Length: 282
Image 1 (cartoon, rainbow, N blue to C red):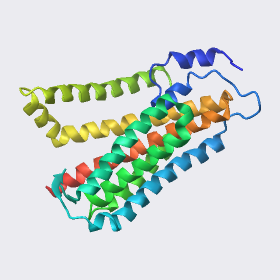
Image 2: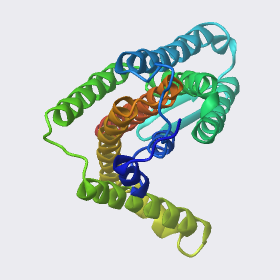
Image 3: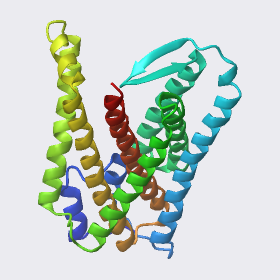
């Protein structure tokens, strides 16, 4: 059964509401006819499932690091934002493979929502593997930063949840305009930086600008702000899914969208801590 109403029309007019998975949900007009409508409790459980898959990815990396990786000779030593990193070719190979797989599954999940229970789980697992590499290999000796990033991420999620539930932050046209402007700015900076790096004449300037600590720090802080705004937008979309009684199968999309944003915030917070501590080490 399809249903068209004023709320749905308003939703479709929004160009940017949240991450791609959530954004597609705002265009769904179908309602449950068999009593199996989406619910907050089941969305929460499914979100927890994706986050637990992230924990599984972390644990698998730790097991491999203590067994397979430890028997490999260190092939590469490099400096990453003030941290001296030593890794084997196999470690880096697994890290690159997890990164590529995360990108692929993220894209598939965004355009083929029926695959989300599988692609979302794989993406979350890969993200856990990547996070574990950053915390236990790149930040070796400073592993506490991973826990600190977790505490800050939980605090951000709780604060944004309270601000949304109490109505302090309302998702309006102005809210979406601010979010779109910030997001478009980040995209524009990334594109111009990439193009500038490819041009030999402008490459030194681009490297100098992006290598500046304060500019890099500002861009990371801006990324965290954008991710936090996306979190508010995700809460709104979840309300839309439940209040409009969308079929229960859309719970997976809502849950993965929320988990995606939470993981995005965590990675950006971790990156911020790496920049701050790495700069102090210099």
